[in-house]
Image 1 (spheres, helix red, strand yellow):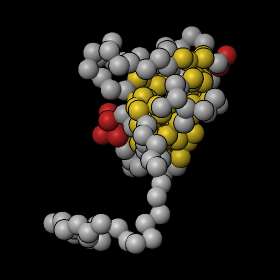
Image 2 (cartoon, one colour):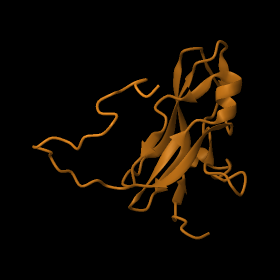
Image 3 (cartoon, one colour):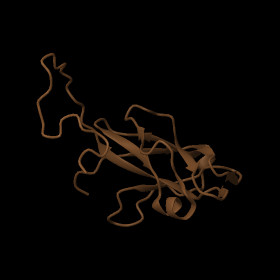
Image 4 (cartoon, helix red, strand yellow):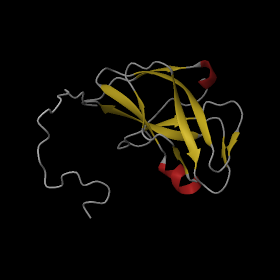
Length: 150
């Protein structure tokens, strides 16, 4: 694959036997992440749950990994990634976790191996910061914020 980033993955002991992250289709942008939990957990409406994935990543410099919601969980259960997208920096070496919240009206049950989020690897551009002592350039929009464009 041209332009692909090498993503090295360590599978932790509590994730042995679970599927490694994988793209489900040729055109998929995200790798599926699964729950590396021992016992099922019920997440009440409005509650949050930090789901371990049992993975540690070696993300190449110049890239990040983003933990994003799965559309089916959002549609069918109201479950999403609370801090979406959750950014994993290239120098982080801890376990990847997915912070999920149940926005649905019913309790949601999560079991070992359930697909709970997706991981998107993306390039990162570092900005060169310059303090604009003489102000910023003018635009037609100006300082118009939320809803200002119609």
